[in-house]
Length: 226
Image 1: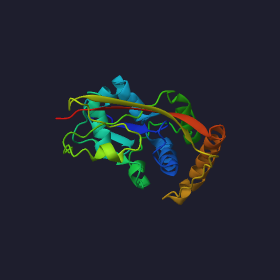
Image 2 (image 1 turned 120 degrees about the horizontal axis):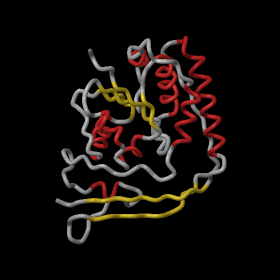
Image 3 (image 1 turned 180 degrees about the horizontal axis):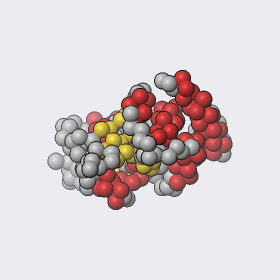
Image 4 (image 1 turned 90 degrees about the horizontal axis):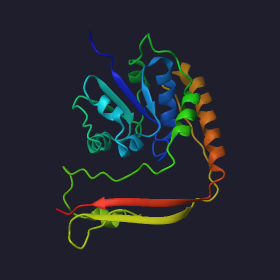
């Protein structure tokens, strides 16, 4: 008997670098009839080496909906859970073909409320920063351009030319935040679901964001010179 495909969706609830419109449209489609696991933030799972990562990478047909494929593979590798070469990674930074997601539908999957799921994932997000740098050793040429490119001083080279840790603390002023988003479903029949889910999530985020004009910034980094 063929094992069921393993599908993981990252909501990027902490960094919020994945477009809200893309996440909303994807969740609306997945929640219709796809059996999938939704996590608040993949980076947070990697930071604590969550056992679900190794389970997901253990084999079988795997699909991950998150960010850039190279970044996702590097994250899993850093958590000692290297993904199989056959893993399909769907980049939510780019437009997603919802027909591909519809093809993942299974009869046994119960419909879920995408707006409620998004709200739950936002609430589950950890209080600590989940982002951390992962250097792709296969592509790094030791040119050190990252030292001048990074605005937060995460990267540095120690006096001994080997391991070096960097840490910066500060406060960032954001002004009065304004949340806005739009999404167009490839299937017109899905547009009402997308609009309702998007409207609710925008309102929830706006409500949370109104209280934050200043927020603390902490950056941590580690580098190694070969």
